[in-house]
Structure formats: structure tokens, C-alpha cells
Amino acid sequence: MELLLAFIAGLLLGAGLMWLARGAFANAFSTLSAEALQRNNQAFLDLAKSALEKQQASAQGELEKRQQAIGELVTPLRASLEKFEQQVHGVEKARIDAYATLFEQVRALSDGQGQLRRETANLVRALRAPHARGRWGELQLKRVVEMAGMLDHCDFYEQETAEGDDGKLRPDLIVRLPGGKQLVVDAKAPLAAYLDAIDAVDDETRRKKLLDHARQVREHITKLSRKSYWEQFQPAPDFVVLFLPGEMFYSAALEVDPGLIESGVEQRVILATPTTLIALLRAAAYGWQQEALAENAQKISQLGKELYERLGTLADHWAGVGKNLAEAVSAYNKATGSLESRVLVTARRFKELQAVAGDKEIRDLAPVDSVPRLPLADEMQSPAKFIAGQS
Image (cartoon, rainbow, N blue to C red; front, side, top):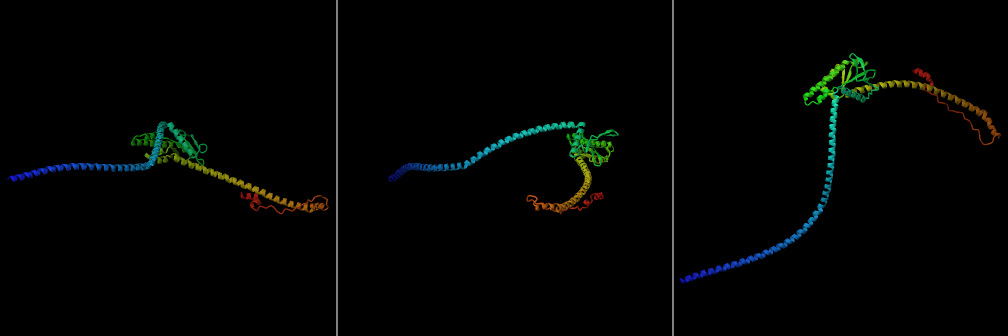
């Protein structure tokens, strides 16, 4: 039993010693491991630091090269950008200047429109007066006549006056037509209702005013028809022309009253605008040109007859000249023959007898063989007789 206890105690003592030894070993191993790890870490850090420094040096050189390459690439771009910026500044300056100029022009245009609006208002107010409307219509009529080439000192007469049943009749224009006829033109400017229609703010009011305008035109047609100008101015066509000084007055009246044309024709009144009156006056001017051509043709015929007679007289004289030339040639040949055969033969003997000094000889005289050409035309044979036969 004691042995057993001693054995157990020995075992327990050995186990304790082993445990103590293992703890010491563990502590020593831990200390050695920590020291080895620290040395390894320091070596790793030194190695990493060295590699990093080499990498940084290499990267620094590479960065400098890249920066240099980028600089070489960016320098032209920077110059282009600077040039572009200068151009942008120039364009912006030009835009500002142009905007300022445009602003001034717009302001001047606005002022001009304001002035035009005021002048138009003044013109509208003036045209509402009957006397001003009548004078304006007469001026428009005169311009139309001038544009048509019918000047007042040759083809038309303004403000002619004739006596009628209602007193003096005073048309605005009388156009002298070829053949001695006359065309009476009266200018009217019905503007009051038309101007009111333009100023109307709604379609219904505008239509009412246009109806008033058409009614005024119809009244002018009736009044002008009652004057019967074609009976007072003879000879004249059996109609009179009512001149409206604007195309818009005519079209506005026809817009609401299409029967104005038929009504005017029935009352012997022809409505005319500047365009249609120019065409009518151009036709009259063409008639005058044709009449002038006919008169010129008559004059040319008379001049041709006189020229023919004078040529006949000249031919008679010319034949006499030829006859006299033939007689002169015959007389010359006779005188030459007498001189050669009667006088010069004796004169040459003085040379033979040495009665004259020198070597000069008397030349021979030859007769003229050419004779004048006699005229063969019948007019030249007996011009007076030929002219009498032609007449």
C-alpha cells in the first residue's frame, strides 16, 4: 500500500515537473517566435521600403517623361485655344457692335413708322374733306394721263366747261380721239365710307361701311349719267368714263355690289381705275400714232410725186448735156482735122528750113474717138412726155 502510494506520488511529481517544463518551453518558444517575427517584419519592411523607393524613382522618371509628352501635345492645343479665344472675343465685339447698330436702326425704323403713322393719319383726315378728295382724284387722273403718254398740251384738255340744262358742266378731262371725237372723263374719290370700313373693328361694321361705299359709287354713276356729257361735247362716244383713283376703291365696291358694272353700262357710265384708264388712253395714243402714220404716208406720197417730177426734169437736162457733149466732140474733131491738115503742116516746114532754134517738135493732134453714152431709158428719151403720160 505504501509502495502504491509512493508510486502514485512519484507519478504525480513527474507530471508536475513535466507541466512546469512544458510551460517553460512554451514561454521560451513564444519569446523566440516573437523575436523571429519582429526580425522578419523588419526585414520585410526594409525590403518593401527599398522596392518602393526604386519604384518611386522609376515612376518619377516615367511621370516626368509623360508630363513632357503631354506638354508637347498640349502646347499646340493651348495656342489654338488662345487663338480661338481671341476670335471669340472679336466675334463677340462684332456682335455687340452689330447689335448696337441694329438697335439704332430698329429705333429709327420705329420712329419712322411713328412718323408715317402720324402722316397717314393726317392724310386720312385731309382726304375726308370733299375738296381735298376731289383735288387728289384730279392729280391721280393727271398722273395716269402722263404715264399713258397723253400729255395735256397735245392730246387732252383739263377742266373743259360746257353749258347744260343744270348749268355749267365741268368734266375733269376731255381726251381728243382720232377722227375728231372726244372722250369725257370725270374723276370721283368716294373715300369717307371706305376709310370708315378700314377703321372698323369687326366684320359686320366693315360690311355695312363697304355697302355705304358701294352706294356712294352707285350714286356717282347715276349723277354722272344725268349730266349726259356725250350730248354736250360733240362729237363724242355715247358714254362717259367715271375714274376711281385707286384699284382698292373699285374692288371694295364690287365685293359687296357685283352689279355696279352692269348698272354703269346701262347708264352709259364706264367705271375705270388707273390700270384700265391707262389701257384706254394707250389705245387712244395708238390711234393717234396710226393717224400720224397715215398723214405721214400721204405726205410721203406727195413728196414722192414731187421727187419723181424733179427727177424727170433732171433727166431732160441730162439728155441735153449729153447731146451738147456729142456736138462739142464733133466740133472738136473738125477743128482738130483743120488744124492738123492746114496749119500744123505749114508750121512744121519752118523746122525743116531751120527757121527756128531748138529741138522742140510740134506734137500730133488726134481726134476724140469716144462719144457720150446716150440714155436708153424711156424717161430719159423724152422726160416731159413720159411724166405727162404717167400723170
